[in-house]
Length: 248
Image (tube, rainbow, N blue to C red; front, top):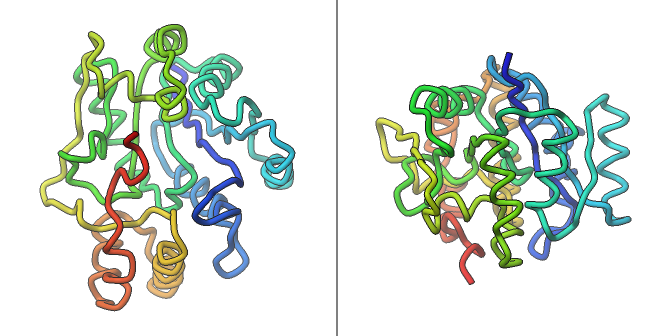
């Protein structure tokens, strides 16, 4: 059986919202919310948090240990190196790349992206990348690729900026990789569920509280319904755009 491993890239350092991954909503850290949601995937065999060896991220390892979550520590800034060695350690055949600024990761979207990858035979499948053609909200990001593709990127990518962002090699430069993008039936790309700024946290905090109140899991349409019901929340982080900070 193929080992499909979800590797969640996570560290405490953030210039815009330091410590965001362990900020809490009703006593629960955002990272715990995300891991619990990813755990509802029907296709993922293993979940690993990949943090850095920086002393600042000792608290991430401590959180994982206390919550019985597998943790890998690697390079702080060379995230491609971190992913590669994490994937080797967990014997991954297929890697699902997730980032900890997306606490509202949707297990249905994760499984749809994995199924697209498996059905098409591509090297790399994603839903929100490239952002210019995405139909999904920023913050529902899923990327799926093979261990072989990751190994090639690890060996060939030299630019520190591209190594920091891990997967640019697959889709930005089209270096002989076959790629596919998961499309949704409606264009929800103007919605924002990621956490990069204080306003983002306010929005996500509101959504998690509403999900609890409504007793909903929080699949995509439920998230849209919640945010559409509050014009104030919908507009709070609308001035930020997908892919902000990516470009050189």
